[in-house]
Image (tube, rainbow, N blue to C red):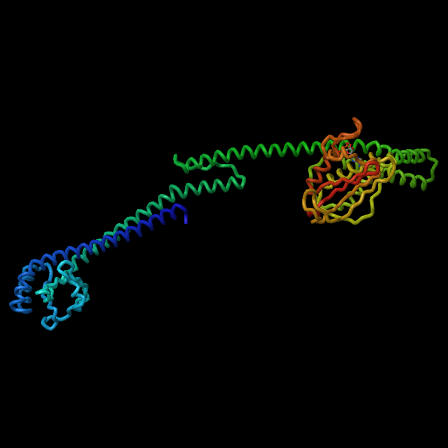
Length: 483
Ligand code: ADP
């Protein structure tokens, strides 16, 4: 049930109960008053007849008293009056109340008894005692008609019922208008609040009037507009942040491509020399038909190799929207190593993939390849000779700052070098944007910060272990995810 109907219903129920109680108490009190008034009348009539009654009783005993009271009754017909002797046998009438109930009566407080007549109607009897020489001679019995009082009580009950019915109708009218004026308007406010919490700030709530509910509606609309503005600002800020991040990532990729380019240009030198030599031989017409075919096949194979290297480089450099797919991380590492092998050669570094399992998870392959490439480039740069090892394994781990003991299975890509290591001063700043220890023009300080952002976007993290002068190990932790 609606709040308005509930409140009015409870209010109405209270009023109905109180009115019924009031009606009942009024009827009771009026009945009592009626009885008291009748008692007073009986007392005054008793007082009036008492002296002559004593004389009659003394003269003629009960018969005298009966006769006198009968005469007296004919003059006072508002109630039935008769003489009741203390000795039951002396009275021709029967059905007298027990004498001990009457014995307590005095001329001030008379005995009153309610009995039922043959038809079952209530009879109100008042007994006025008559004492002669300190002995009870008998009673004057007043039989008070109760119809009038009962009729009055009936009238009171009827009026009360009428008032209750009128109030119920009035209550229903209040409920009807209350639901319209309060309930329906509150419903609108509730609906608007639900829309706001669901992120829908459109269509302001329309609540007519100038009362508190209308004011609440206006306040709700104002709040909704403010929230909408703030939401737009947040969205814009988030979009701007995303786009800035995307730009930084792209800059980092372009920088890496630049670094790779010199190694790759060098790498292309050998196949180009082979192609040139073989093409010269074919052009000299000194080769047999089989030798021409063989040279052409060598040219094709070298051209394919060059095309593959260029394709990988372009693939790495290409800007594309982030997109997750299920990838075999071992293949991803192999591809990065392939791309970096020329650079490693140039720097006299041995770049190897440690034999490991083939593990698949949902990632953005281009982004994760960018991270692995950054770590390998840094490892090569930090090394002079030596070996850079890239390994893939699955292990239990807990995110930094999270649970102390490992809680989940993660896929870990580690890049380990035997290079310079990282100083204690540099360690806390490694992942800060633009932090670099390299010379101007050599390092941008973007690689690690961009890498960290990418791994964080994949719900993972990067861990560093390093010993100055002995080497470093960077480990990427990626959760197992499905696309
Ligand atoms: P950049 O390589 O352009 O300097 P990065 O963010 O990739 O930017 O690296 C920041 C710094 O972290 C590097 O300048 C270097 O001092 C340090 N660093 C990163 N990787 C290694 C590593 N494998 N060995 C030693 N130092 C490293």
